[in-house]
Image 1 (cartoon, rainbow, N blue to C red):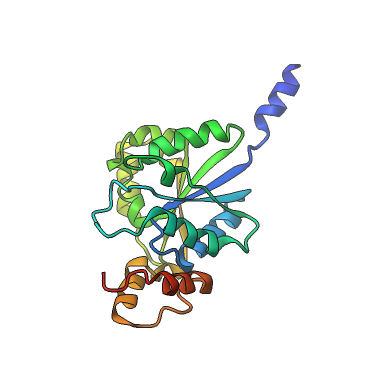
Image 2: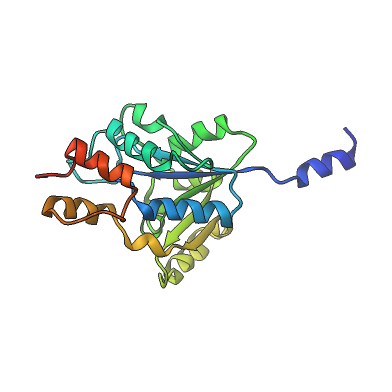
Length: 215
């Protein structure tokens, strides 16, 4: 290979893989809109949804079973050719640490640049995650935020404490993020309507399995 060929190869952009991690209990339109907007803005070839197995940062004791959350995600994304689902974390025993998942994905998709899509609230906690520096080395972050979310304090912290990683963290405003899984679970418990907050296939699954009732 000549020097010119090597230089051309180095300049060639890698395909970008979006990773949407979360409990998805249940998945709703906020998640789906964030994934689709991130895919378009950051030119992601696809978005891989990875429901967490045993999330180390969640303190709820009544998280729905992994196979149920997997099924809700599967139903929610089946009509989008750019969305895929992985059972990687659900099948793995023990706590689901992001760094372990990213190492596996790095080996599985060596030709891709990885973009992790998460909510702005979770983004504020990045530096408390296990092996945060390694995570930021492996991946780019897209923080999906409600319009008007003020991220100045977060970026100041990044610039002061981790100046080498600030270009790997991006923000994306997503109007539909006013919807939350917590609110949907509460509505089900109170017998309030949840239609149009999440895909109809997911709503029907909740009804069929009687999820979140009397919890």
